[in-house]
Amino acid sequence: MNSPLTVDASVFVNAFSPTEQGSLQSWRFLAEQKANGVPLIAPVLLLTELAAAITRKQNNAELALRLALEVKNLPNLTLIDVDASLVELSSEIAARHRLRGVDAIYAAVAQRFATPLVTLDREQLERLEGLIPVRKP
Image (cartoon, rainbow, N blue to C red):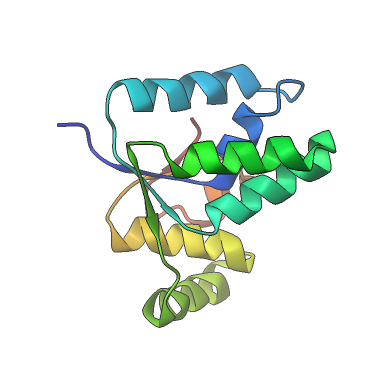
């Protein structure tokens, strides 16, 4: 059985942004996880982050919405609602590790489900060391 992973929006955005450095690596990483049936776990706000970033980067709202829908329907992806208990946990992580709010939510999901966090975010990679396993795709 493949161990589950929490994947940050930065990986999805990079995979769908072919002109960005590392895009092909992120794309291959996501494709490999899907092909191998690796369970991916992310907060539901992944879809909002993805749609917003793709629209801003590529100036194409329809593409952004289509990609968000495709990601939502990935068979190996579980989206986690951001409820009061997750907000409480992420608030603690944000304060103790000096992270932006949304970044702390991904860390809280990874901690709650005991999964490594896969991200391209430098602050998450540096500041979460010792709390949860964090790595690049």
